[in-house]
Image (cartoon, rainbow, N blue to C red; front, side, top):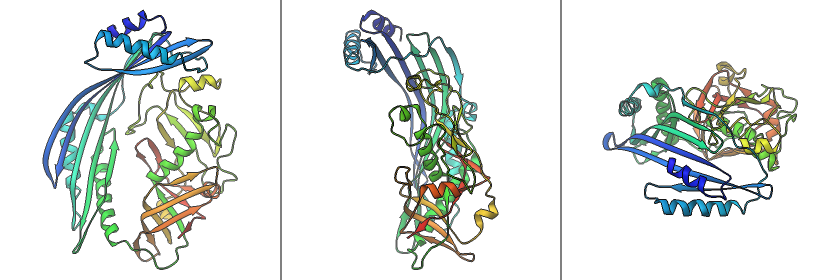
Length: 424
């Protein structure tokens, strides 16, 4: 790092610089049909240099990677090339973060246990969850990671943070009399909750069993639709994306401060907070890639957009106070209790090809790969259907569950009731 900085300071075209060091230690286990086939340990570090060149009232930038094989002569050439490229970019001027230092550890119970022991606990829990008849886990891969991120810039920023996360990839399989059905499932988390992991795997094994039995309904479906947390994550991410500084600056979104996200709400009102860190959230961090300390910000309150959020550069362009690049999306719980959610008839969507959300065309919907139709007496797994509706109407009448959970970067209601959806 000292050598890189010394060479950056020697180049007269370089106005500012930023170094990002992203180190990752991982312990990885690969199982085939329950047998541990491979164990792999990795220790890598990506070194990314950003060169800034001020010219004619503009601030251009360009990046390059530095490798262990990069010689001093090659480094000087990389810096010169990046500076020349930066001179071609006419970005409006902005200030880099300044004079912040520190070492941070993002809260996680991973740090109390060696990575190898964590991987073993995770694998044992995954396989112990396989108790359903005629099901199997043909392939299981466990990745446990310790990240160390360092940011240094020319304005006195020097920060380091340690983060943890894990990923489990599985192939749940149902073995029928004449054919087998397989699914792919990826589960990400940053704190170890063995009970939640057990629940996650059991649900996916139940899902693959249901996929084998699922039928295309030969009767019309006219009922409320229930979405689960993965699709809710996609819905609320679409809203939060519109209120990011970069989206607003590019005029690429629909919503602005003061706009109603929900027009005349009859269901639960939506409140969204973008946060730097949340328990179990894989995007939790103390600072972002610019070294800016992350500050939580509520962007939607009771159905109305009240603020923007985002990284340093575009925040300055908009004349806003930057929050840093916040990765954790937190949605307040609603009023729907378990009794409300289970009141038949309803269609509970379990798996989709992807929820499509289009505010410009007032559309929400998508292809449903698996759902459960509850008619009050029977629970029927169905497939080969689609759902569609008016996004404005859906948001106005949406009911959010009281129960909350985490999915990747989302923390909020685990279910939601959608009215006025067409099923075909």
